[in-house]
Length: 289
Image 1 (cartoon, rainbow, N blue to C red):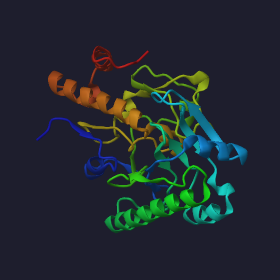
Image 2 (image 1 turned 135 degrees about the vertical axis):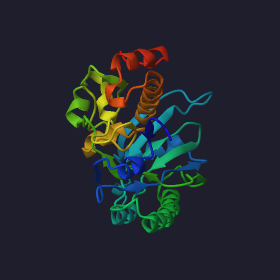
Image 3 (image 1 turned 90 degrees about the horizontal axis):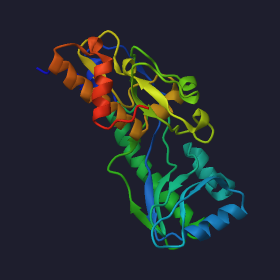
Image 4 (image 1 turned 90 degrees about the vertical axis):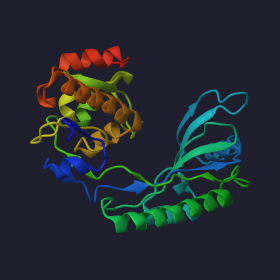
């Protein structure tokens, strides 16, 4: 038997079965499926969006040896009546997109199913089929109504849709959106993070970072267990930051290191010397300044 267990299942399967208090976020949870489209004339599409007042956000960076320097763009497709009806029927948003290479809309995020119990196998199967239909229809609508997409095609889809939120574990500290916005720092922090998924509506003060305290990864009522990832933060707006991939990676390194130190020193996660954990993380190159 393992001396220390780390739950990064996303659905809090281990914590739930071990008796930790969990909050079921249904029907707050919704799922989506990003996709990519190749052979897109990005500049032509952006010119159309600009002319029709559709751009909600845009970012520029060098994309290799090409004239196209647009790497991220959000645009309001609901301004086109033929697309608006379909999007509103399914609760779609945006989309938000990323372009990594020339003529490549590498990441398109707009599909949606809500509400959904992503712990129910039959619901998961239904969502998988429905979201793939949405991807096909959205690509058809983009090709038909958006200049620049005329000759494009779907270049990839994920192996499974993305789940944002199911069970949340009650931990010793519950990170709030106010703490995130105000760049709150903690004496026991084991990671820092500086992005919110609702940007630009929600951003972190002075373009700074907030701390993720060790106790936010310690579930209440269960010993020898650590948790990390999208199963923390009960507040939905806080969760829209702490569940982000890079945040989850930082949390994962923290709890993995903590588990190893617990075994090495013969203590429980709740009694682990946080200063020792922080020192070890810094030695690994973790940014905690």
